[in-house]
Length: 212
Image (cartoon, rainbow, N blue to C red; front, side, top):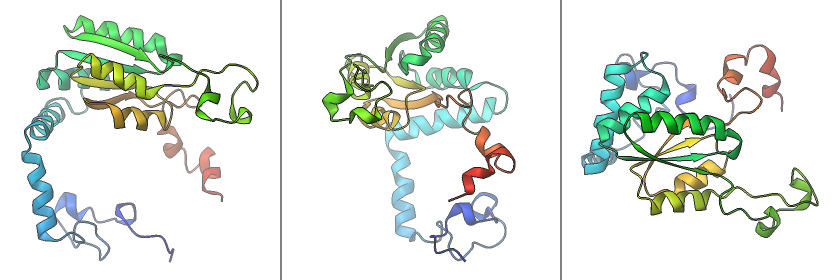
């Protein structure tokens, strides 16, 4: 047996989902005390959290498997009563961001799009070594997810949508965004922004990923 800590990925029962069968002895559900479960459940009574969960449930219940993610995001925003949608986009996906912005506005929302190079400065100013630049020795604009969040916070957006921010930059944007954040595009330039393709081909081409 592996020495890794067992978790949901190692479970085959789905007991927590189906409520049938036995919980495995490493189940994360049973690892919690009743007091912990009650305290966690109580957090859904918070006004904003409750509102978001209700909206998410409505989108799922009415449109599961029927709408694209673009449409689901717009329905979610509508149910929440959002008026202004912020779009935090990779500069390399500006064409896609322009189309999405037009769609958002066509649906009656205000929209503001901020690309990742806003307020750009050289990566060297962050202490990033020249050898890890794409173009060593030349000016290379750093992405600026903190400023993207700052501008959208200043604009008082009701919901922010991430479009292709780099791994890590998306995490920073989410950390500093004052509004709820959902993702429309997860960047994967190799797989045309379909990162799940690696998982679906893990028994064929991408078996190489299992090698140490």
